[in-house]
Image (tube, rainbow, N blue to C red):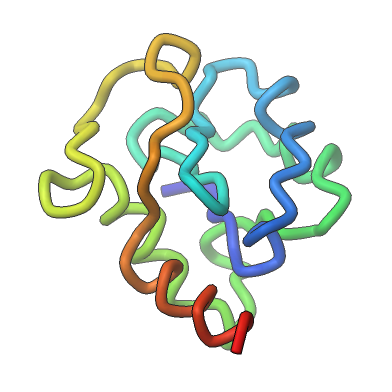
Length: 111
């Protein structure tokens, strides 16, 4: 995985990153975006377009956001979204779920 979307994107979902991604590897969940780990080409363009500064290189991920490495990967698994490797977010469109850890964080922020 080259880049990871972290907690700063939750409930922000600006979307500028999706517009600039040359390989269309940023998928929209219900409350946040997720970068497909096998589709990202590590170009870094999304970093400069994210106003929330929610995207990090996997090797420069802040310790407090380390869980998002697994969250971004697991989002595509059969247990979460079931997307697998669709080959581009545009053909998929928004997904009506999030990773369970993101959903749990959201309920904690709302309380």
